[in-house]
Length: 372
Image (cartoon, rainbow, N blue to C red; front, side, top):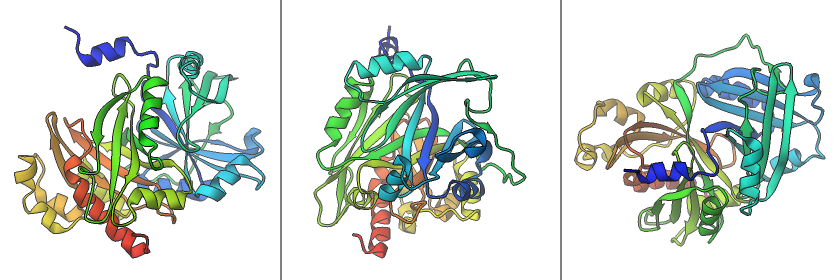
């Protein structure tokens, strides 16, 4: 008997194998690369810039297990990259997805209403070829479709291997679990429809302002997933509250819609978070009282509570199992993009039971900034 997941995969017109890379436009890629290596344990992978024939930008590519980050900076002020950074600060530009056929992915999505951002093209060198294409999504974010099955090089044509004498140890980060987008008032449902109609995703979870609210603020969220579950994009929009919500603060300081946070999986969140903290990564903190009745709320877990309490790691359970998660503070000066560290012990959900405690922690940070 076919399950719903089997049916989705058999009828999937846009088969995705996961996240290929995430490109972040930054003010200084050389320094940002040093930060992500030092703080998060990413490793040097590839470089493109004037030395490789690219005249308008530099890009550093970092890797940790299956996760690749590309950090890109413009070399001149009169460029689209410079305008993007001037408006938004450091922020995600491209969520690149692994596909079998980048040309077909483009055809399937554009004929369903997707707006082109990158017409299909093939890059080639002595190591083979990478085929790619892209469409626009919310804000100025783009989805690129990357087909690299015929490429043996370090990253893609136009890049050279980036060798460095400075190589801090990895911290146990594995792959992108999900990426969350913040959209404007009343824009969540239109973007849900985009992912359903253009990319064949399904809405697997929905949260309204009764689920995600505090005394002061609220938001609504819907989780979109592709057929095999490898790619998940929750979409948030503001909801009415007494004071400014975290989504409103993001939209104000990012000056538009964009990626709010990147969730990265780990097999051992206690070890990973300890290492990240020791390297200077700052995390949101919930009150110690959160742990007083933790086991009553989530049931038995394999981990000792004391290390979780010491580090501020949150726990939640669904019908499939439980998860452990922790959120960094914003990783740039604007209160915009941050990271989530997540370990799944069977759970397929996103920590609904933690929303109130998490949002109150975020509100304390907003109040410190004078933005609540």
